[in-house]
Image (cartoon, rainbow, N blue to C red; front, side):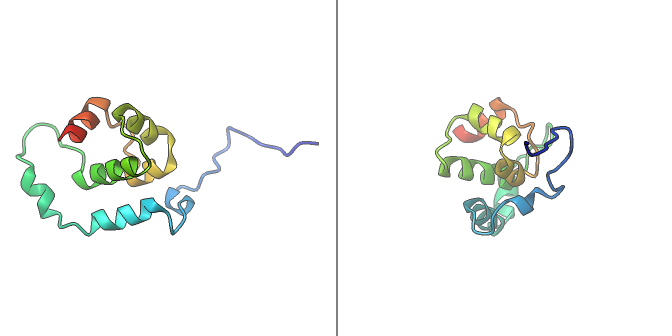
Length: 107
């Protein structure tokens, strides 16, 4: 009578990139940020302390979030855990804390 489903079975592909359409805005942001000279980011990092999140990854996440009108750092952190596109842009680093996101957003 009903189609069978099983929530305990892994059905997502291991490479979540295949779930994102080729013409999606996130792919454009990914390409654009990857074309930025990486020395721009490394010249701003003084060193010391814990290893930071990669600035290109953070920029991708923030640009995409802003482009879809998500400005709240808490909402961005939530999207990193729940939204496949955010997961892909962040390289599945979904443990970004809210205070860290706030400090990046406030620059």
